[in-house]
Length: 615
Image 1 (cartoon, rainbow, N blue to C red):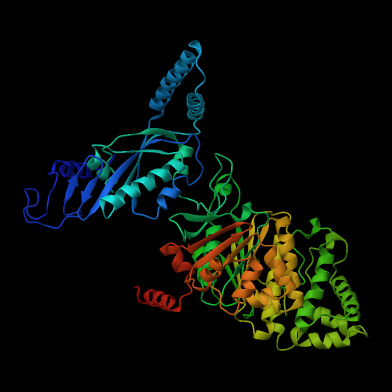
Image 2 (image 1 turned 180 degrees about the horizontal axis):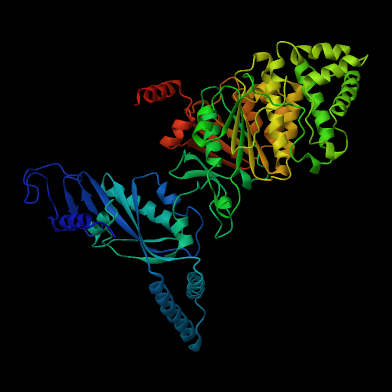
């Protein structure tokens, strides 16, 4: 119920003279300014409010079935239209009694028509079926009953414009199967009912159940496909506000054909902000978590130390790869390797990828043969053989592989090329076993402490450690693997192929690869880059550079309007693509989320200053 002061205010407004020109009056002796028009002139079907006109429409008829966001077209009306929805819950006992009465009345009418030999009334049959379904859902506790009043107040500058606007709104309502009638001789009450007072003076109500009422709210954008199931759970994560309407854009990557995504933008367009926001919201509980499942486990490859604040805010793990005492041994077998028949073979094949990235070029067939023998011998010397029972033993390290190569007459050159990484100046990344497990709900691996020469290999090692966790058959759960600034790894052919294999195989292991890059032209210029983008069911484009827009437009089939939108986009403006679905939105974060994910240097400096001055 609305507060009593609001009701009294509405009643005082109704008791005022029909026309009032402001100034001193009995209830405002000082002539204080009030929040409203300076004059209200009441007519049969319209009001004159100051210099403008308004008319209220009452929705008296509703469609038999509605879908999600069925009121969105009214909320997105280009003119000035106030939409008021008054909702009162009906107690279950009262609802059950009224439904029984309504069912009896409808059934009596149907039998009366049948006894008189009249044709069936489709509307009567549909109403009887709806009442029966509603009564069943109410009895089972699956739904509740509400009394709903829907009123529309149209505003215009002149009387003629108001008539045109009312006609347009009535036509729009008719297209939604809504019957809208003017509030004849109750125009003032109608206008007050659409003010933000919570007061309904018209009291034209319609009974509605929970699913239909929930679908009235614009929780999803009309540009996105909706779940066809009538009582489906609302799924997905909030991406932002629809750029062309007042709706919200919710997207569920886990409901797509695959769970991968690609995010491309120029520097400063807000791609990292958006990526961190999705990663943060992936940790929030959802319907799966409420049903006893686990939330999404998030892994992040962070090249610029941007995710430390986020990891700290959610109590996750943040590894600074390259810092003293922080290592991820690339020769480790995955957890639960005994249940993966070819685990050792996969480790041997990854060693080929690792050495190729270290060398900066592909290995020759002869070098591959030598390396294959050396890898097998290195694992054997560590006591790890084809017997799965030996796979729990400590794994060898790069220095062990280098010594094995030195003992091979054909491996001296390979050993010499590996020496800087095994025992030389770059050995800090490889000279010991894995120091930190990556089993937290959010794991971010920073690469900023690595020298430029090791950035690509560091990205590969971090991704491989994450992938070993994904492959663990004993802990299957949804996992999101975020590779920020993925172009660093795409510069190496073997690294690009590793990313491509991850994109192809991630779905089989209930994981999604989030590919984020600020260099779309270079990424899309390669066949593997185009293949990774094509294997992403979710594609997000933010502001693009003029030099790259042609390549991006051709790769994603953008229209001229979409090209212009991406060229002129503000930070946070984005275009979501998925098959034939396209929607523009602006990233939306709460103040607490913004503190955890912001990358604005000025804002970060202000936050650090405030934290230093707090007692």
